[in-house]
Image (cartoon, rainbow, N blue to C red; front, side, top):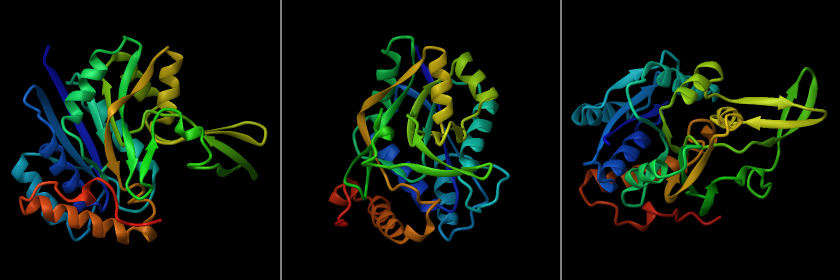
Length: 277
């Protein structure tokens, strides 16, 4: 069987990060047996690296599609943009969701994830890569980690003038996730969406980050996800926490320069940050 995978990422003033992600995707993955179609969505980016990204995308034949959103910081736009993409693109066997500030570091991550998903039982809807936090120096996102307070602690939210302590709900992470295009998934996306949500109990509740509520609604259909044997790297919160952006820009550009210069991915920096906590 041939597989047609539609990959999508959302750029919001992260043009050099997107270029890094795409260059490592092509550098580390043998895609000869996969019909991979990539689309870059854009929230009105105006960063200084956008022109270089546009030139790279044109050279690769990858479209840059405006979402209609501006580049103001609003995390909910990510889920809405991905929801719209799924609903507007049903002619594929699988969707590959990629954060703009992740990158590939191991060989054949995409073919491996596809094999792992296709060979899984029919009650598995998606496969998520292991997410390595570049500055945390460890895997920070895999099945079940969100309930571990050593990583994220608790999320405080106000609703109807009351303060709630919410636990981060488990999810199939959109940082790097391959999901089968099935009628159930598309219906959940159509009705529920892929964005963020929260549920409130007495003094507590659950917080569903992007893809979180979708993951739990899929569970009501008896469907779950798996975690791949493959790892990817993630800068984390590049768009949403601009005050911590400087070292990420520095490291991204250093890695990108290596790839643009044709030196490949030999630097140790590709695998782990040299920043000492």
